[in-house]
Length: 259
Ligand code: URA
Image 1: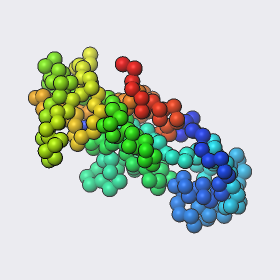
Image 2: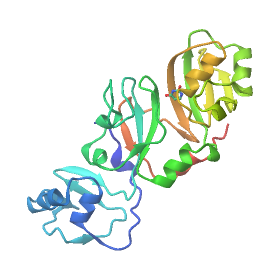
Image 3: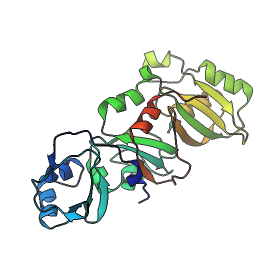
Image 4: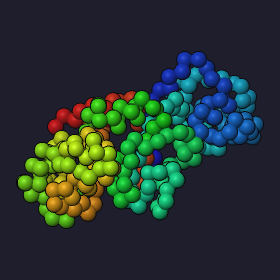
């Protein structure tokens, strides 16, 4: 596992102390029975002290505990940033490739976290996962216009006419006739100095970037997501690595980038 979990611990929100067994259960450490057994087997510690009573209650704000030596910061809601490598599917039940969930530790896999908009199996880059329903909605709904920045290696270098058409809007084949009649456009599209296409999209239609590029007569060979809102993929997070996000980064994901 590659993680920088401990440096990004948002405070918990609960003011009322919560029994440790309930805390472990809420954080994905297994069934209630399993969580109680972990405590009885003296495998849970807080501040270096073994916790012996499953009913001993703790304030969850900023709580960090250890289970079998694994240090775990309490998060009422999980918001995870994963640097998705190529060759992983975003589904919990993948059909041809391993799931992105296999890159996360078991307590996170046990929580009801979902990818915030899926990336294709061969797309790399910034993927958020959360069990925070309202946040999930805000980041994916076209109503909130959160721009996602993609970089693509295309078969032919994108020319000015293609860039213009991407921003002006293209029609995509859709099963839904209403969608098919609505042009879809990039918020911005430019050619990077290395020849790659960079474009920002606010909608999340199926294979949208690849289909838009195909619609202007080119083809995406490799696709990478670099930014959601104003939240950048950290340069030091290797493909396959993950990290918790704090409140500041959560706000960044929902805000407009400066440029
Ligand atoms: N657009 C695509 O075509 N694929 C992705 O994975 C994301 C956006």
